[in-house]
Amino acid sequence: MHEPEILVAELRKNLAVLARIRAFLDATEGRELAVSGRTAATGLMVAGIIENWYTCLETLFLRVSQAFENNLEASKWHSALLDRMTLRVPGVREPVIDEATRRDLAELLRFRHFKRYYFEFEYDWERLDFLLGKLKGVHPRIIEEIERFIDWVSEAS
Image (cartoon, rainbow, N blue to C red; front, side, top):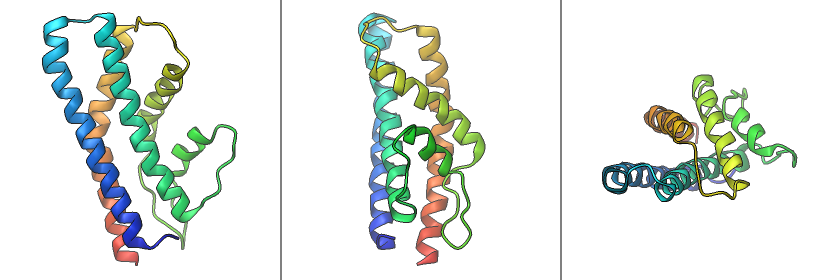
């Protein structure tokens, strides 16, 4: 495992970026969406923010995986990584997130994958609203769960 202090610093850095992305989402809803409405341009902005938020979180999960397991299959590693974050590995590590959080994040992962291969400009605002609800609902839980994991890493070292 990486030095615990390095892992904790990396996780805290990612948490700070997650918080900035979340704040940017709020600002975008308050400014661009309020002024322009639900246009193709604001749909692209919202989709990009959702993608960036999940990618930042996935980077955090990858750091945990590298510190403790460092063994992900090449195929479907994104979903395998998310699943592994729920595992308690006796003598190795505690879970990073709980199962309910994993289910909500799986929706955001599916969207992130879709977005990377969707080259049109029009997004379904009903779907974006659903995903925004998932992100806003899971964000405080993910912060709490990662902080709990950071406490565990700090105490275990």
